[in-house]
Length: 345
Image (cartoon, rainbow, N blue to C red; front, side, top):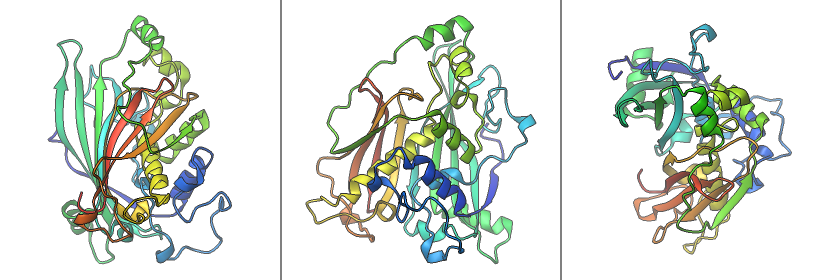
């Protein structure tokens, strides 16, 4: 799989996908978690074209750009694209985790003003884990995002973005064997193990993801995976009691919670800058499923000894470290991550 060629995915950075993501999340987030300048009073785009200065990309909104560009007839039976699949017998795919690093000034590079940009995608590590007959294949997909300068040809743009991306992301996908109908039915009725967080959050909010939210996120990411959309498929084939919340949606929710925490401005060092300007890295793992129709709690806690970044121009001396996680209805951690603000990623 690592021999598969690097792929370039081009996009035009219109504000519309980002705005629609804001609308999709607006019923589920407290106002301090909205990316400025979005508010519930601004549900329609302005009639005039955005200026470059007024249209920076919010945190996590790169997820609704650079979608897979593949004909529906070429999708796999579960609706996923085949680009990263190891092939039979590993027919089921889930999002195991990942990491995102934001370079200094990344928002100036990826403004939503109609500029061209490119995602350079490659396959990294491929690891097989598990006993024979019950193996899982973990595939790291690397995505590097950056602008296409007006004078650049395609090769030059892709080389530049590969060398110095505005945003660099690792997506870890896990591929598993099909389940028998009996195994799927058994798993659908089984509760996941509960791993409690070893500490309490200093900021959190709850939400119940709806079928509409999952549909909107699937549409915005051009993702036809049936595990998020079809309750019967999720139960009878994948062994889940309801459609699953997307892994990247969980990432977007954790970054929104970090934005809300930083917006409180209660750091003992005098207040922190906007999340969009100071978050430099987040790494996370999905530990257990999150389901449509079930309440979750998104949590943030500043790590002991961590110092939060000041203003919008962080330096290595103002690095902060934050535990971020999502709890399932029984209080167990379904997603766990670590975010860094300020300094270097």
